[in-house]
Length: 522
Image (cartoon, rainbow, N blue to C red; front, side, top):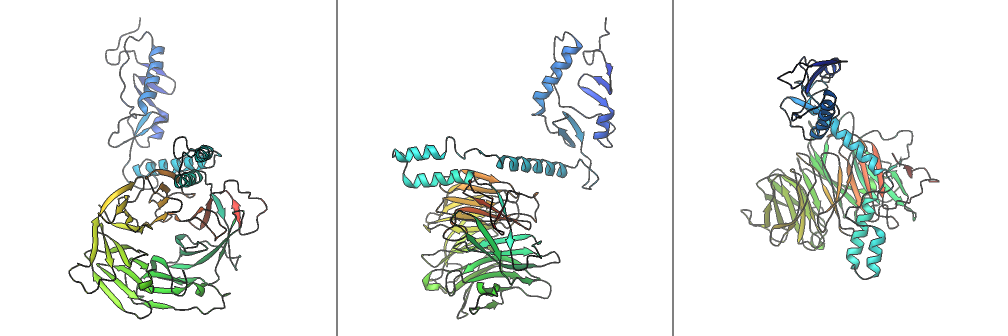
């Protein structure tokens, strides 16, 4: 007869590797895993099983109960729960590299595990549709039966194509192939035809370099990339870039350069031909304006002010004519971090650090006391990007809380919200492609997300090919005709020193391509 133990309901017994008593265990293996923890690791609380017939049935019932409660294990201050070992381990203080059990390192390990899982899922031939029951065959049948309008059919087909895009790595060709690009991309901005992309790379010894990449696409959808001959280096930081139409569409690039040390900041207007030695044409207008600490810039395409640009600074907005030099200054209550002009009317939309969004009509001059603000509305945090839709009655705005909202400018109210974006303090832009009905944003977690512009449905989340880091946030460009008029819709992603292409064409044949074209999956 076994002696009854009133505390645990069973007699303590010794097994190989350590002592067991009810739901507590001590072993040499767990002591090694817990570092300097001299006490036995904790397990999540479990209910005592009644009417146990024998010790063997008790151990089997306890293990099944443990597997059910491990997923819902309560969080204990100062302890970390390992679901694989079904144990609590003490978190050691500090952030040194020798400590394997700090909360930050455990969270980073879990994020990296999730990223690798998503990368593996992206390699599968068949992916989950963004909406239930959505596939190309079903959409085509509904279209032939007249059950689906043409606009809805095109929009839903684009959603199916987006969910099936696969990653390919591009090789960047240049005149000096012996010196490959080893500097990390920080920003890429495509022109209106998406045949050229302005690039900014961080330089290891400080500062940055910038230039232009030319893209060309064949009828088969293959994409080739060539870097222009001339690259320009500066010890200043590039805060913002936009393309400017001075002589012809996208003939120049407008840059906001922040001062460093003894070098003052400025706003530079550079002709695109300046970056290529093979262009026999004259460089054209090249200007540098003494405007320091500019956060943002925008170029006006309205015919009435077609040589006008704006810059957002600390507590003011400067509107300047690039030809005549005429300047108009508007005082604001906060730093202006984001700007964009409307096309049909000369109205400038501004997003501020305070969360305020206001519009400025260039035709109304000379007003004081901020009465020149045509419309005003607010979000909860600093505005990082504003985008005016083709309707021009609607505006998209993103802030540093990760909120992306679609505003009706006429009533100054949000009409749609796009959830899932992640941002805490980074200056991150958003992109809109209205022909495909898509909204794109890269989060501070290094994930690229695509939403349906119409209803806010999250269509695709693309992980970065490289581990997440604050200095390795991808920069993306999406175009309906990437590489020119013969190009196909696709996504261009620059991260670290690599360039990736996500084409709509999932049947792309990678064999037999010329150098400078797709190298294959990375």
